[in-house]
Length: 462
Image (cartoon, rainbow, N blue to C red; front, top):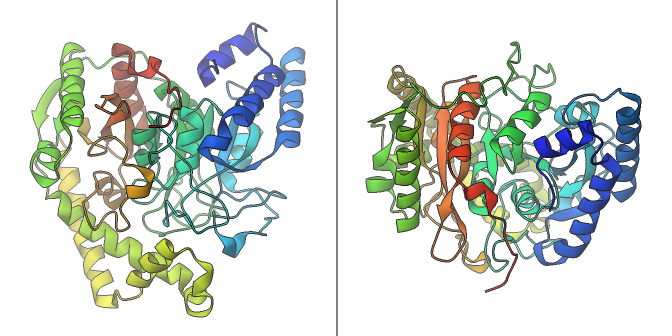
């Protein structure tokens, strides 16, 4: 069994495990499992073994760089990697080899991580799951006939399958939290500006966030510690001191004030019985841990989604306009149609959406003045079959994740049980800006109070 990041770090410390042994185990797991899952677009075995040997030498000489030193991870394939192909899962960039690492790739490498390769995404982080691209879409390890969520699809799948210990993702409308929720792992979208997007291919500049996914809350905190920080290469980067994200782990939930946005899942969008049960069981755990619970009312979920979808579509088309006008046939059909819709959005629509965004952000700020955490659904239920994933997701049914991209507030998704099909269901928690430490505190308390994180997929087909 592949350990968690925290477990591996402890085993490195006692010399019970070596980075080379762990890396070889991950590579063997990839070889055995990825043929059915398609999480990797590119494996970097030589680089991984070189990274692992360097980490092992540091370990043996007493010069370890920290808890991430020697930990095998992989990157979503919109993160630039120097000398290593970065495709955005698109034929348009099939031969693209960057000359520089993304800022967060460099920071994680400096922390000593071992790079196993590049992971599947939706095309340019929006068009998926698509079956007309050079590489197939990633599949859900809990049942490979089912969807992973997106767009950090390969990261969620590789983690759930035990092929990597941690990975990077991006989140414009839920692209970290969606695959985390549907694949049964943990994913955090940090506060807007906390993690640099320098060297990451953009989807929508005012909504894009970078962050980590991992098997546990603690592991996410460790990864975020290395990724966060100011970067002048990102105009939206927040120039502020990075706190210790693990400082409150183990502090429990006693006295924390939790606001539940019930109308999101009780009135605005229908959810499965298993999702409702997961939310109620989570609230019961929180009460048992000493948190106080109150209901919170925000604008309808449709308002947040309409606002965010207009902004995302318009900004995405602006980024892709040249290619859409000159080589539209090079895109997969799904992304091409979504981008084309963005081209029909006028300047007045975009300005009105940004105006409404300010109102919704102010509403969320006011709602959180006397609470520490917002809780709501993450997904309506278990993952759909991969051949039944909706083309117009976000338009056909509103998503639960986009409100926190619109506001820029940090939000984490984590497993909250399992549905009738045996796939995970999830819950979402959000905190005030730059209060990731409290978000990790309460999520860790929940994780420790349940046993959901002890169950791994058997990777079966229906």
